[in-house]
Image (cartoon, rainbow, N blue to C red; front, side, top):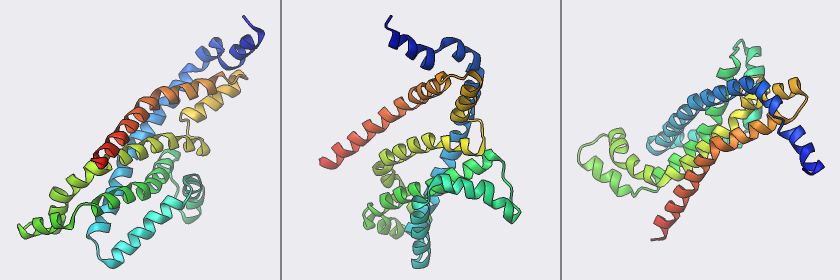
Length: 229
């Protein structure tokens, strides 16, 4: 076996180190999945509220929601987490690391999801809404039953793509010492004096997210093919 390959295995694929710290990595993986499982539906729900508000609200409401969308899309999520976790205690509000991480992810992604829903709803012909109102439906009910289902067909791909980004962004929780996968890998590295745990975390992220990324690519190709017809 070439010496360079042996050095690589000793430093980045040391089996003994991996076995020793695997419980720590597994714990971090579970916490990452829990963080994504809570933040993702809340982020989508918040984005849907923003999108519906932009479509149904008056001029002032629409202007305020556009500011909301632009603010949280432009604001770095890492800085947002710092302000929430370390800044809010000065105002008398202290959140646990998990809740602070979820709140930062939800606020940040409410801007992205909100813009996705807003654009999707805006692309549905106005005649659909007018026809629903003419049949006696109230605006919110018409939006929910008639316009939104049509908009969803056009935004599934960007929704999936942004969901993938949210799952990857859960690694910011390491900043507040939440023992998600990245934080656990760094702690494991300090215990083993070996970068193998970090390599293992990278492989876990790849195995976890590659199928989702493949699905997003398929949805985007299908959407482009539909638009080209």
